[in-house]
Length: 111
Image 1 (tube, rainbow, N blue to C red):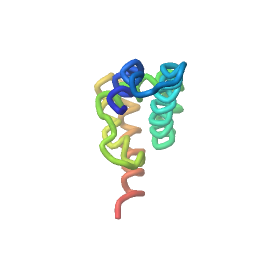
Image 2 (image 1 turned 90 degrees about the horizontal axis):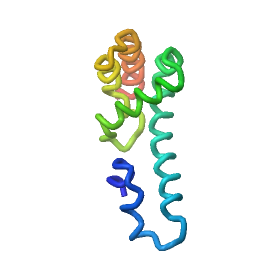
Image 3 (image 1 turned 45 degrees about the horizontal axis):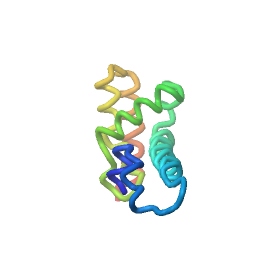
């Protein structure tokens, strides 16, 4: 299921779901999944989200998430490398702010 969601291939799940309209429901779940991940990043990086605006932040966040899928069960660690994507996209000021916000987030969760 994870592969189908990450690959945006709702049809791959159809053999496992025997009800009418399953593809549409899977698409809703997929969209909610990505929305939750982007929302988690926005809450961890509020200054960057505000500075970039909703549309640009969403595009940068999805770019990051596709390059760096979550490798931890907690969303609190999702943005550990978020600044790298912004730097690569030429958003250097946003990357610097992201480093600060990321350090704050890391300090909160450090034992």
